[in-house]
Image 1 (spheres, helix red, strand yellow):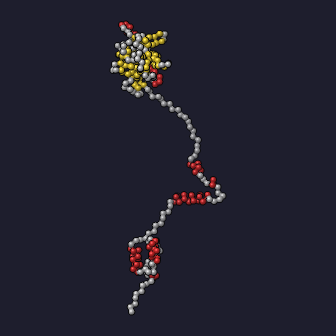
Image 2 (image 1 turned 120 degrees about the horizontal axis):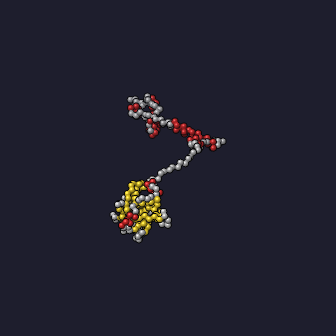
Image 3 (image 1 turned 180 degrees about the vertical axis):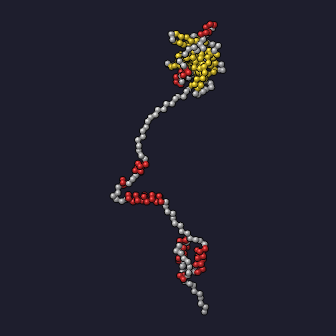
Length: 281
């Protein structure tokens, strides 16, 4: 009889083995190797052995250690929390957010002083030039100055012949406005040869009068406003004079002769508000 070849025992097989091999294979595969150890054939072992040697190289990666500062912070929190649970330690002995802030934010008295800023008001009107004219209403009544015991007034009447010399010549001072309007030109109206200027004031209603001014060019803003009239061209022929201090009120003459020049609202149908401006002859 022929003797059959004996299969060597598993323990007698010379092979290289590492304790880390099982860490490389999956859990299922490790269990299968362990349970079939006794029936494992040499061929199978060679396959696993060759695969292990020539194929995949095992690599074990260790978890990264936490950053040093972060680790210290974690330890500090853990210690504090544990100390809180120990009897006999007062919770008030632990520092709080306020304790930290007191060292960071230092309260100091701040001296405050009020500084009054004086800002010059912007000039509303700026003087441009002066021209001299004779001004008549559209019925050709002239403007004449009448004075009685230091009381002066401006009247409208018809003048002819030698009486025409009574007609007042008007200094028309033109200004640039801060907010210009091409249809309205700011002017002041003064009597040539005197320091009298047409001036608007308010009693019960706006009133037109004459007031003496030493140098009207030096007046600005609120001081100048009562003397300002907006000259506007009407129907390409006439001119109207609206009060800047009392919008909607215009220099007006009566239809009657020798009546004082007044200030009337625009919708007044009795007084005349259109004027003819002629160069001084």
